[in-house]
Length: 116
Image (cartoon, rainbow, N blue to C red; front, side):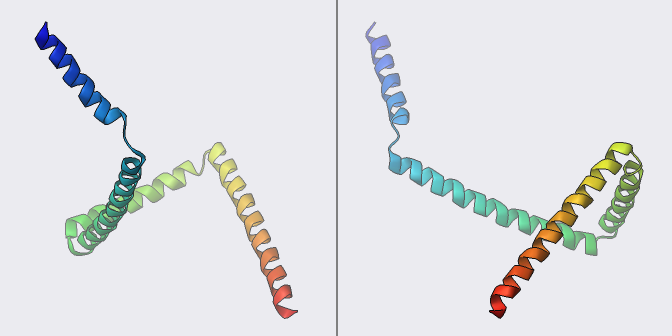
């Protein structure tokens, strides 16, 4: 019975250590997470550079990359024949035109302000 009580007390102590995390610990964890995310981004960029270099220097990688680009273009062309895709492309074009119009109006207003 004493062993069970001691084990239970030990378990409660361990749980209480993790359950009552102070605010400074939370801020420290957020800082660590932020640092890890920044490190992850740096490694991702390095990976992209290494892969691009491999495509430029490795004949097999270059051949595979070219084949993938050709297949991707063929797939895109095929999917663009579908009615739903055509409609979505038209919608994207309409949205792009609205954005350009709004940007031009914004530029025109800022030029008027500058000339005053």
